[in-house]
Amino acid sequence: MFENLTDRLSKTLKNLRGQGRLSEDNIRDSLREVRMALLEADVALPVVKDFIDNVREKALGQEVVASLSPGQALVKVVNDELVAIMGESQATIDLNHKPPVIVLMAGLQGAGKTTTVAKLARRLRESEKKSVMVASADVYRPAAIAQLQTLSTEVGADFYPSNKDQKPVSIARDAVEAARRSGADVLIIDTAGRLAIDEQMMDEIRAIHDAVDPAETLFVVDSMTGQDAARTAKAFDDALPLSGVVLTKIDGDARGGAALSVRHITGKPIKFIGSGEKTDALEAFHPDRIASRILGMGDILSLVEQAQEKVDHEKAERLARKVKKGRGFDLEDLRDQFTQMDKMGGLANLVDKLPGMGAGVSQAMQNPAHTKQMKRMVAIIDSMTPLERRKPEVINGSRKRRVAQGSGTQIQDVNRLLKQHKQMQRMMKKMGSKGGMANMMRGMKGRLPPGFPM
Image (tube, rainbow, N blue to C red; front, side, top):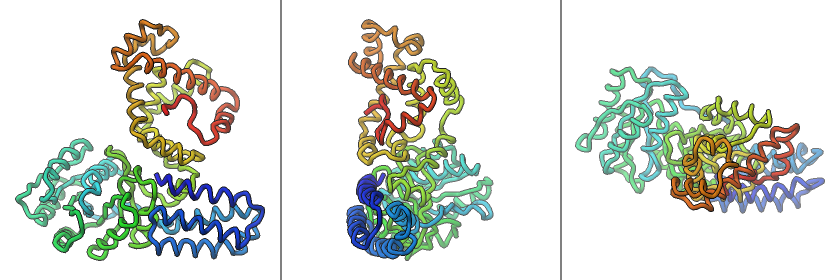
């Protein structure tokens, strides 16, 4: 996420950290680099101008110039200003209304609106313990209603049935009544998108809004459209009283222009970010954590929250005990690690939140080949007997041939897995020793530990 911007800003600010003192000259040179980085990231020009002006004013202030480590003080100024333009604090969805709390979703076609409805329904059910009903007022896109029905089953939300012969406003009104009768806590209404903003679309969504009076009107926008995302959000905000924005496809956004422009241009908070197609891939938007990620400092808090929600803690504790006692890290353990990683959004998502990981590593992890390779490794382990998983040293030539045949892979794939397992085994042994974790992290220097599928 935002790899290009992270790379440019990290290099510029790293040079400043080494400066014994800051002067107008080196601040000016550095801010020129920061300005170029933001423009290349497709951040809107008014946002870039305000950002640079604010940082310059604070950087030349007494607090930074007189600091014992002025370079680090300037990094803090840049970090604080990134947080400020993205919204200072986390904006949550407002559920303090008489049920059903109505959430209206708006946006252009292709932004991922319907998938976001399902993701939000799942999040509200699992995190907020709310009963959720979803309804589709999109009578134009073929199979839009059927898609939402399928997704609602997957996430455990009630579905209000509608069809393409009904009027969108009637669907919305009837869905509210149905949600009221069923005792649903929240009703999320999906609306039609267009390829571009047009008057008919705006009239229709205004009519739906007036008919149901939603507590939240969320604008769903593709983050990869950069500053166009902010312009589109502004157009919708002029037509509708938006309460917030959801940025989708954030995992594919190497620039970050939308995240840095939307709040400044619309005045509306970004409430959620979506990454990937899975229905659990919706995160609350924390400006301070995103600023930290942009500056290459990671996002450990979000990583911990994800781990608490999705990791099998019993298995994790069992592995921790094994490592502490110096027992072998076997292939069963390796398969469990891959499974847990997949639950947390895959290796790319994990690396993106780790501090000190270079943008190159993060970009490399976006390659779909890594996900495919991880699945292949799991298939190889699944083709082994329980004995082979517990004691990989018994796997001889004939066993390798059988495992390769059973998993639909080649013998060299089996050999590669066994080699990577040995590397991870050594790493786990180091972690179990006194001061092992700290020594290992120092030795990695922003790289992935040995044994990870690269």
